[in-house]
Structures are given as structure tokens and as C-alpha cells.
Image (cartoon, rainbow, N blue to C red; front, side):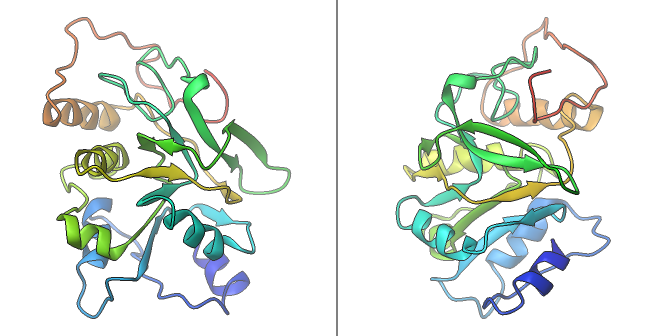
Length: 226
């Protein structure tokens, strides 16, 4: 991501905030940028992972157009949210895809040829967005008292933020922006399960006593159905 922004997009007007060798919760890093001194309320804040490569030459214009329509935008998401949903793309912990309700597209891989996953038509209003890239105006966070919940060090920070936006009556949606993600998710890993339990407890959706797990310690790929 750093190479992408400092080479291909070096002429785009950006203020880059990097957290090299970071050991802090991702939510804490993101919050530090939201509430830093000197930032203007009309600034567009783009939160993204370091293994994302932006391929779209007009990505800033695409985000700006999306934020005239929605309060929070992302590359991929789900138009509905279900009780105890374990991720934006899946219905339950058997990792069944919610295919009829997904929106957006993301390419996967670190080199060509990339694997493209088309989830559904973009520019749909969503209840959940994938946290690989999220963008909003700083004023939305400031005016509504929103922030990333720092109890979520990595997993579930995106789903939790979307629920906070929903609770404030704000709109979320996907934008047609070309980007490649260099890694798959680690759904089902031990640290993911701990965050899942914390997420369910926060939102009053206790984990089922007989919780089913399709593959206890595996990383589930977001590219194709497991």
C-alpha cells in the first residue's frame, strides 16, 4: 500500500499516516487519525490495510462520488445483517455465503493474474462493509460521536463500526473501485473466535451453546465458497 501511494499516486493530494511495525490495535491507530489536531472536518478519511493495492486511477474521485451518496463506503459489503452473523459475507459459522445479498468486488493476490471476486452490483446501500478499505468524512465521526471500538484489535472492528453507523441512522454502501487484496481472512482462528465472542456480547447476541464450526483452526478464504 505504501509503495502504491508513494509511487503511482504520488501526485495525488494525500496526507499519509503509516503505522510501521505496529503492535497497537488497528482501531486505536485509526482513532488517532480521526481525532488528531489540525485535521479539517471536511477531510476524507480512508482506512485501509497495508496489503491492499489500489488499481483504479480515479479512486479519489470514486470515493468522493460515493460519499455524496453514503456516509461510509467500502469495496464490498452485505445489504442485510443477520443475528450472530460471523462476517459480512457469511450467514453463519458453517461459512455459508450470503450470495443474494452481497455487493461490490475485490481482486485477490499479490501479482498478476489476480483472482477477481464479484460479490454483487456496487452502489448498493449496505448494512455491513468489508474493512479492507473504509472511507468517510471526518465530520461524520465528529458530529455523531463515532469512533472505532478499541476492544477489537483487528477482527470485527469493521462490523462493529457498521453497527454503530446503523444505530445513528447513517447510510453505508459500496463503490466500484478497483483494488487487489494480498491476503485472505483468518475466519475461525483462535484470535478471531475471541473477538467474535466479544462482538456478540457487546451487541446482546450471546453465542449459541452448541455453536457449529465448519473448520476449527483454518483460515477461510473470502475469494470462493469454502
